[in-house]
Length: 485
Image (cartoon, rainbow, N blue to C red; front, side, top):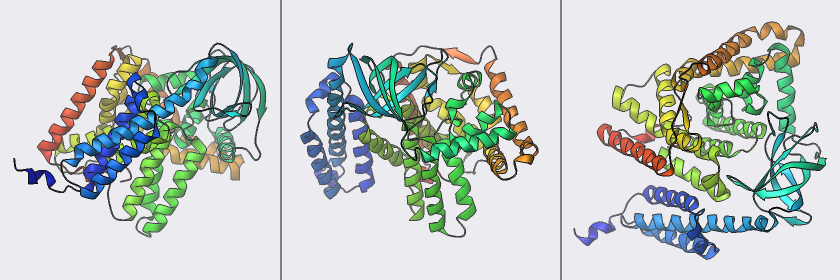
């Protein structure tokens, strides 16, 4: 082959996508022991300079250099973060006093314990990195954004948590003024919803509307997990996508700027209400990028959008990539919906635009396929009724969100009639609870299959191979897929 062919210019999107992909791979590998060699910022500088050269020349063969540049940036950022976490190791087994901000809504355990995710951790005047997992007992009221001081025996962390303290003693709880305003609005609205809608339907409706999963009754939460419906009641992209798509349909014919502005405000408010969890970080970033591209009349290729969002959130907190299962599942599901689903539709049904039922079914199956290797590796079991349950519930969720919202508003304005106005919401949400509980009680609802790490990697490799085959067979332009359409 003639050498000049290697100097043919490619569109810079290729190099940028490969660079971002290299960052994600580097961040994932940074948890391995060999990555300690790259725990210096000079490697990130080298990676950045290499990418600037790639961006300048845009030659075909420089795609490989872009991958190396991204790998160096990811390895360096991840190794520096992991090295900073070693400050906790010398105190494992010792009794310590830590102060931190409650980053997300506390989890209530079956034994009466509360599980806290502490961010902005400090010991005295010394600031400490990463987050710490803490469990406490007692009837103290602890909310998201509270500043909590705890005392207990420090232990090794897990996942993305650098350390943990179990059965900690609460030294003090400080609630900043005016506190977490968005949280107070959410709680107040939830009280008005419960004036008209009985439990557990009320908690399910609030879960749809605000991503508030942790208030669900334990039995309903377990049922939703068993039938693969948890994704619709956590702060994730699905809830946000419904709201943004509704806003877009209402205003896009009037003003593109107004549509983006109002949708952007909606995204910010939704994140404020739900909290900035890893999955919500992904959802907000992806939606914001898609809105910006739509405003300028452009479209992100879904693969580019996927790896760009993964790289940005991973650089913000490398532990998302190698240690946070919620973040990993969120991106796997997003990849299934944005890449696998349209290819499956085009491969089996041609270019005809799918109807609502076929679209929901296709996206549900694709998300299940894309997340299956990770779920089997992490939990050793997978739902057999997820497709059926999602098909019976997902098409009705926008209506359920609307009816729950109307109930809350009427609860504020005319509480005397809220029980009457809430009847449609009560009936619909009760039906959804029945679907979840009935499907979860089926004897064959779940299958247990333990998959090792190599099995998970093989599973993802097979999915990628199928995607490449269908892309080649259909010649489908994935740019047509959009998260806000």
